[in-house]
Amino acid sequence: MPATLTSALSLAGRVLLALIFVLAGPGKLANPAGTAAYMASSGLPANHLLALAVGAFELLAGLALIVGFQTRWAALALAGFTLVASFLFHAFWALPAEQQMMQQLLFMKNIALAGGLLVLAAHGAGALSLDARRRHS
Image (cartoon, rainbow, N blue to C red; front, side, top):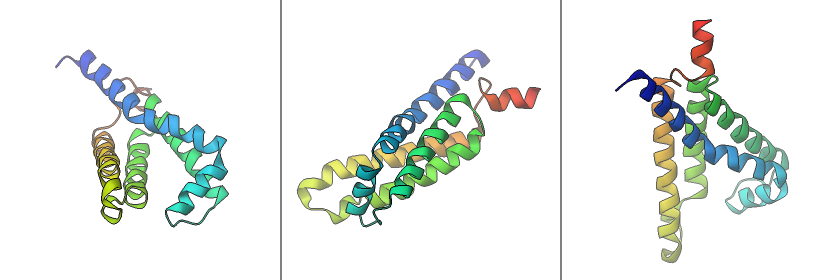
């Protein structure tokens, strides 16, 4: 595969992986009370500061992926976060039968997302990234 295509695909992959976090983070920041209440509904303490921290983390780590800054660490952190969130918020196995299918789909989506993030952590951001620019300067 030509290097220019590989670089473009790496950038597109980073952007697509990051979008879910970049779009979710500001929502949590804009409504920390709602986020804290949702967290409490899954057994976590209704913590306003934790809701703000999660929103900021999602936004900043997602933006780091997009621009390719500290990509391996951002991807690793987001993969861990996504796996933990999957088990906390999409425990389909503990739900009534009529809710299991949707929650299993969301759980599996998150598992696949975490897999993509782990691949990104293993291989890095690619040539079209701040990480690559820092290595070459």
